[in-house]
Length: 484
Image 1: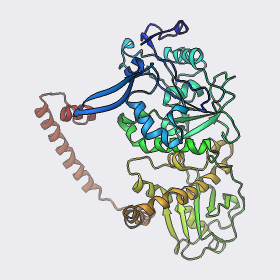
Image 2: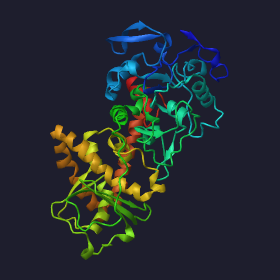
Image 3: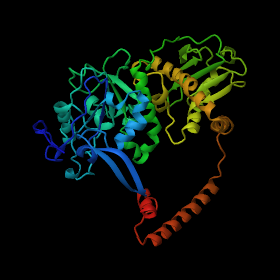
Image 4: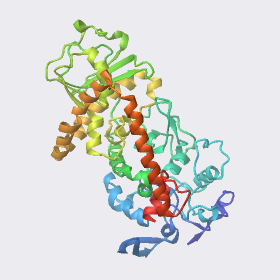
């Protein structure tokens, strides 16, 4: 193990965690991965060769003694075998680092490999919190980026915050989004790594990535994929590593498209459709359309000729197909623009729910996996027409390049989607239009029955546990009682 060097003096964690784990820098590497902080194997220089499982939760490790360095334990082995190969890069050709190069957790009263939480009130430049000061000290004292580096990959929230200051960001509805929902699977342009004065990156402009020699790409830490709700992002992080390959090859992101602000004379035979409207009033703001050749239209509401006039609706051929991200939200507006009585529909959200059942189904998440462009949600304020146009372009691109090929390989999923999911569109749309009859008296009666049953179960649970204060609604306690 390596004692902390004098350059660690002045760090808030200097007295917390005795040993230091240096970066593993390859002089001519083009990519640098930055993880969180070392585990016991990285700190001790135990490079995992093979893990022998003896029984549930019990195993024995074969390891090779090496110089302490990042990602040589179980997470590092998974990084080597499952994730890194998707980039096309061999391990010997990438540099590895940690945000914090020691293990202060136990001394701070945390888990051994833990770090204090980053809160939404913390800012990279101004926060006086120890964890922020430690991140900046460790970065400035120990992060040495080779001149050959073109791409830095931040793995997890600490590395992302340390280099970009990005933590949370408001979405187009003014809601706070965390690291996974916000920037995972996307990148930012930065100045030269060698002359970098690290500061919070401006996310109010579109980051093209194609015109920059220095890019930071953000993903989750592999170790986090085995914790709680993060397990559903395993597939997404695999896609992130594949996207790194496309980024290095100059194949992602695509150049931003141009569009027409005039509605087409005739409706395409196969097209993606999207709308923007005021949630409070449901008043249409604009709509966008993209055909299979990526001809793109974004039309303001006041420039839409039909305006619910049947004689002015855009002509559409019977049997034409309309693809939407969330058709139920867009269908009422589509009906004002074309005659939908003989039109077929596809819904990308429903398709995603079949192909990747346990994952999020919103467009920002799907775009982060398969989209043709870097993150563009901020454009809803800065360039709303471009934002709307991209919300039609991306579903068409993703549908053609990923979903249809995936369904082709999985006929059973295609059957479930077409036979059982798509018909819900018409059923739910009709219910939304007509409402549902409700027997208020019967509802009160059923509510009373269920409340009585729940109370009985609560009493029974307290008898079983022997705890008079046991709450059957407390998920954590219930799990502890059942599983230990």
